[in-house]
Length: 635
Image 1 (tube, rainbow, N blue to C red):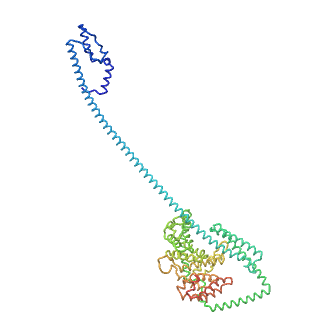
Image 2 (tube, rainbow, N blue to C red; image 1 turned 180 degrees about the vertical axis):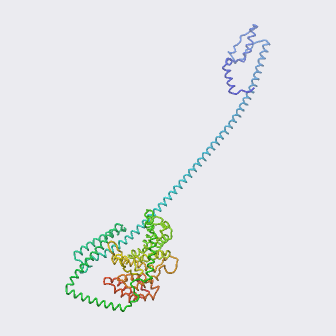
Image 3 (cartoon, helix red, strand yellow; image 1 turned 90 degrees about the horizontal axis):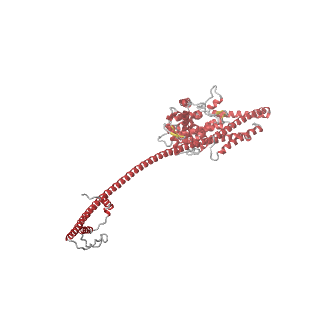
């Protein structure tokens, strides 16, 4: 039969113990004594009392004399007890073996369960390890994803930062260009201011009492003119004083200075009118006096003698070849240049007449891109001069240039190239009449750039000549005649004078501008771009300078103008001409000294002899110095 489990076995024993039979006390000799009592009672053979089994459970049974049958019974009982004990021992051994088997089985089962538990724990560990691995992989992937996201954000921020840096750099470049432009405009205003101050101081000297003749205005009138002139000089000096600390004059300052100059010119005209009236009045008074009549007669006699001497002198001078106007071929060339300039100006009329804001803005940017680099040419040289040249060349070649912080190109408008070419040539000539007129040394760097641009872009050179001839006809040379119906103001403009609401500019200012343009023209004829690759003479070489000089000497001289321009031209270009033409040039100089200079003196009044004196001194020095040293002194 199957062995019951431990729990069932112990539960059975506990139930038996709690039962009625389980509470009975067991005596090992209880059966024998009970049998003896039973038999004795039945036979009446009880010899001694029965000892209660409870009274002494440990004492041996009492010895009694029983019958043989009882003895056998007792022996059987003893044998039965021994069998029972043996059987109990056997059963106990079997139970012990079963118990050991049960314990071994339980131990085996426990061992198997322990192995299963260990396997289960290992499985749990592996699962937990795998879970940790999976979690770490997920976290790694998430971390890598976050890193990629951070990298992408970093790249995006770097892109934004680089964009901002580029924008900041572009803004810096724009500000730098604006600053350069402001500096250039400021320097130009400063030069104009210096020119205005120089002219107004010269005009103010005419208002001083020491500068007036005895036939000038009366004392009180002259004093009022002089007082107002000093006030105007003080106004201009106050404006100049603001620039002494390195600041440039503002537009308002220039307005004040120009207004003062216009008022000074008006004072001079009023004073000259008063002087003329006073002279006329005094002349009438002198005519009434006998002594003055005699002096006038004597003066007239002297004048007659002077004229006679001059006439005799002119008879000894060769008069053939002298003209009052340019030759027909020269006039034809002049007309062709002017027609070409007019056609170029007409070609971009649409750009000038544009009303939309965008086109107007483009026009201003193109004009700044063409004129500002030319304004920056002064006495600079080297890399700065090349930078200016390259910027102008790129603009005329249709490539983009940066001007005022913006990219400008002539391809932005169909007529932009004609407009830029026209304005560029005009600016070169204006630099001659303004910059070179004030600073003679600026003629050579300006001429070098103009010659280089002329060589690469011939149309610019033709327009330079056209603008130069229009502003200074003596650069042809040509002395325009007054046409029928032409007003005095119009004729003065044709002669090169500036005429505005305040009147005609002074002779000194006029001669100064003409000198600047002639000096620039003389420098162009001998200059060429030093960094070019072409060989040979420049685009408008010394042969044109020789032609100008020869034609100038073939024309009747003009008072003040001829002497001034000859001196300026020879001072700039004489050294190059003597190297090129040598003996022929010396013959020409000798002709000027001996034959042409007397003609200049003949048409020059006593108040205009300054330019004649300078030319005469120059020619005398040239005559006395060897041909290796002549013009090196003056250039």
